[in-house]
Every structure is written in C-alpha cells, then in structure tokens.
Image (cartoon, helix red, strand yellow):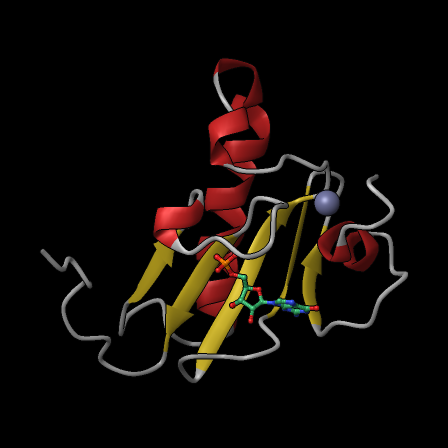
Length: 117
Ligand code: 5GP
Ligand code: ZN
C-alpha cells in the first residue's frame, strides 16, 4: 500500500467510497464525479502507477479486472444496453490518479469515442 494514494486508502477501507465489489485482487467502487448514470472504477488492490507498469506477470489480476467489470455491469443492469471500459494512461490521456483504474461507464448512449485530431 502507498499511504498517500487515495485509491490504496479506499482499497484498505481507510477512505470512504461506495464499494460494490472487493476480493483478494480487485476492488470496484463508484467514481466520485460520475459522467454517466453508471460510473464505477475497477482497480487492482495492489498499487501500480499506471497500465504502463502492468505486463506479462499480471495476467491473473488483469483477468480478474475484466471478470469483475462484467459482473458489476450485470449487477448495475447495463450488461445488455452496453458500456465502455477504459483506462487513461499518462498525461495526454488525462490520467489524474496514479493508481491504475479502469472506468466502467454506461447507463446512457455514450456517443462516439473521443478521438480528436
Ligand atoms: P483518471 O482521469 O485518472 O482516469 O480518472 C480519475 C477518476 O477518479 C476521476 O473520474 C475522478 O472523478 C475519480 N476520483 C478522484 N478522486 C476520487 C476519490 O477520492 N474517490 C472516488 N471514488 N473517485 C475519485
Ligand atoms: Zn495506490
């Protein structure tokens, strides 16, 4: 755990959050500023600064993240309507919190992906 990391604190139960799932590898909780009716963050319990730090040795946790995202999508009733599952990596992507997190977003038509020139 990195003590000054807000997501490490949420994982450890030391900062408040609306947690919807927790297991030995992964925690999922509501984003504090949702951009859609469903906006949940899925994070590894272990601190990785960004997706850049993850690789071959992290198959188990990455697999669990996908499994939990799909399970939470079902729980929230958006598995049929659809959702986006995205990661911001680094400054150009607008990453703000440097504990890797996957945004599960849905509950309304999301429009095209933002791919500006
Ligand atoms: P990023 O831009 O790094 O991909 O996204 C960071 C996300 O974390 C943002 O959507 C922001 O609203 C959310 N966030 C930042 N601080 C907190 C917090 O303390 N609690 C929760 N639940 N979400 C947070
Ligand atoms: Zn952390």
